[in-house]
Image 1: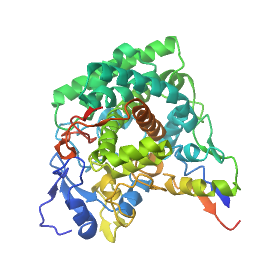
Image 2 (image 1 turned 90 degrees about the vertical axis):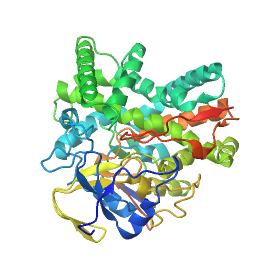
Image 3 (image 1 turned 180 degrees about the vertical axis):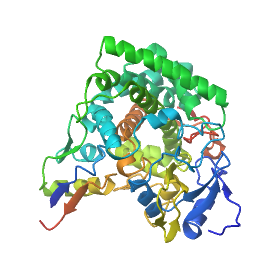
Length: 404
Length: 66
């Protein structure tokens, strides 16, 4: 890491929507701790090797608490975006408080609880696909299926009425955006969402239902205490921004990746037992998953043979790590039956994605329903014509044109 | 095969339960791993090894000699 080198502008653009930028392989090989400049203008260090990304993400000393003095801001707007917002700070980031919060919320995301949601998710997918088919081909699978489905699921979990699904979708989009909306728009969305959630919490207090918000209000953690209102609303916000756009984009990317080489789709049609491993492989193979996870380094640490000094903000690129030949044989090939597949798409360690069982279940269910309902599905454009969305913490495709 | 789990490292991701529900479960109250079968049948060995490899908390250990 030479000091005079101009930091790489980050995120690194890629010529093709489904392909990784050529820089990843170079960086993994020659510059595993690379100086970058974030959209805010602040500097950070980019990690691209599997072992380095895994090491830093699993290290409990380092959190995404970029509000710490000296932490880089990700976005150009004043608040620094979703990673630095005061709401995100209301959820405990480390130690016992984090573990307590995680376990209280985690009970709603166990494999068994999520498995019980599967029939409901399949019914929502059926309903959305019916509407897409009624509208005729070609269709945009992102808009018709990928985007609505996860927000419907989260609204159900939170016990929010169906009529508010569109508002949730809007807030989620605004709050996660890095560059498309102004500071004022982001602040407005935060205020609206906060007000809406306060009213929902008050309603649950008066008349608790069988939903996650009611449960977090009335139930207590191991210490006999419940969550306070700010933490509760922050949790609702966190679940929305973490659970909507990520899965929504992944549905579109998953289908696009599987249809880009249609022999993949045909293998799934012939053998449904591949659905589970194929979903994992699309998560690993996704070269457009977003900027990665930031970590604020609070103590000097040795990573990849170099010392990263305390006070550095590190950006962990899970997508680059997931293409590391040192960790995955034929890393640049999509191998549907790859197993085990210890990819880092959900992060790793104490902060790995709380909703990963839900995300997996949504992806598997959507794929199964699509294979059943639209076996002739194909991309309506050449894969190299697919375009990425810009400016999001979470990567995705602008549209996924399909026909059947 | 002998399986052990470390509750403190478990982050409740549920991968092990999704893969091998005969061997792993999660506590209802907080999602932490529960080991149902410390010496699973040979037919489950491959999937248990996979669960250990993909566990995000590295909370599952498998020893092959026991």
